[in-house]
Length: 141
Image (cartoon, rainbow, N blue to C red; front, side, top):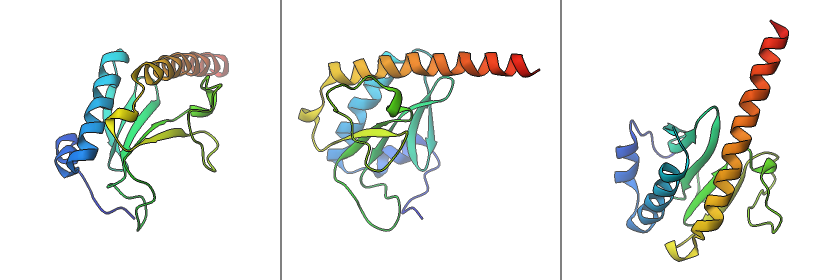
């Protein structure tokens, strides 16, 4: 279903065209500098970032899902985007229920303070969901 099969983040980064790589590197820096104890893991051949569960992901357009390219640039997405505080509708949701994202075609389009704000909100949601699941687990056992 995908056009690639990476064994590591380094292999993923080496595959990217220069324009996408620059954007990916900025997002990776934002994630690593703002999510404590974050774990980076390849899933669907792109990096996902988690603490208790998946928080966000970086999906360059050159890593296809399916047979053809459906957007340009790099997609930065949130696994539980539907729970984020996004009153101005910055994030796109397409026909998805949970996952929200924004596509970036250049580094100039990245509003770092807005991305950080959404990340902080996503971190809180991740912690709250983890605590809720612990309570449920303890309640049933």
